[in-house]
Image (cartoon, rainbow over all chains, first blue to last red; front, side):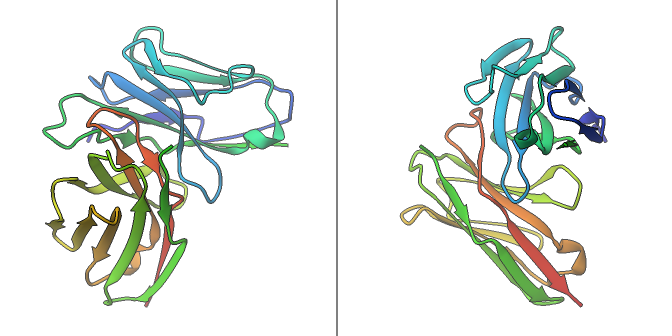
Length: 117
Length: 111
């Protein structure tokens, strides 16, 4: 069964360092999402891509976060410099327009757990 | 803006039914979803319902929607220990718009 892949699964870094997360969506899924999930909260959208274009990055802290999906397939989310408050789970999800009427069914990867010390 | 509220915790015994509740504020929500998250894992879509429906059943899962009160519930029949997880309610305005998630309800099933 096709899955969304993410790496690394865990990342520990010191504040002011740079970190990067990678996501490979399900093959053929044009839409890719990055979410941040703080412990005890639901996921919050950081950025949404349609193919290689950003559709929504209104909640992305652009002074330190950047995201790209250069060839419209896999994607990288970067934080520079990392701050203590960035400690969270970073989830990637993908979806297809062809959902068979299931609405915006998003398929999630296992996430990257970031700890900033 | 949109807001989705859920109770934080539910504890049941194995074999009982579980009912997880959710309220939302956006009256234009078209799709409502229930996702499950097991420890250390991503989210898995359990079921969904269109806003023009009031009930949907899928094996042990029953979703009830009261659109007037903007209230959604998920009933799990014959709850098993493997159902222990966090359950998220989510809504979207269209079939292709972003999802707004609640904070999640932790379901603990004891033997």
